[in-house]
Length: 251
Image (cartoon, rainbow, N blue to C red; front, side, top):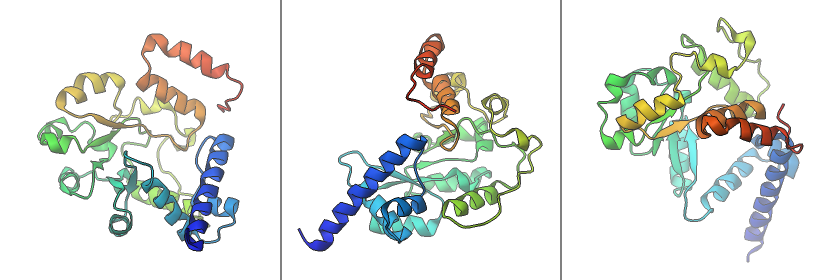
């Protein structure tokens, strides 16, 4: 093994070790900049490259990357061809024709429309079977249905994740101060309930659904998982088992 290859293997193992430790401590994954700090690797681009290589080398099942930037998409396709790609909801595709053009692109395995297209059933039902297989719906969005600043909000969040010292986005939603509440998301016109999935979307030919909340507290994530993935009669049993596990920091 060459010295360079040996160094690469060592760094990838170190990154993996630090990420696992961080997730156990915090309940969510670290940013690239935090990985740099934990591993003493100074270059964020090097860490990103190591991560992409690690995701590529997982075996038979392919890992995917959620992408907003077309420029980044082309770079990843050239340098990490074993990955598959998902068109991000951060593109805010509220125009159905623009969404349809995105679905038709061969670059993407899945396309996540803006949640305000979730109930455009007449248009959605006109998609071919192949096109329906590429659509991934965001079920539990809490964002104000009338929001005009969604793209700007996503951009600021992304830039802050990159470590830029910029002001927080000022949300203009009428009830922004309340933060995320699942009960509020359920009243959103774009909300997709478990019953909707079974009785509307699956019969229409849609099978891919996305639950938001990776940055929210574990207690909220638990409620999402219980609601969408556990039968109602078993939810209290699972909730009790999780709450009684002293190893979990839910709040």
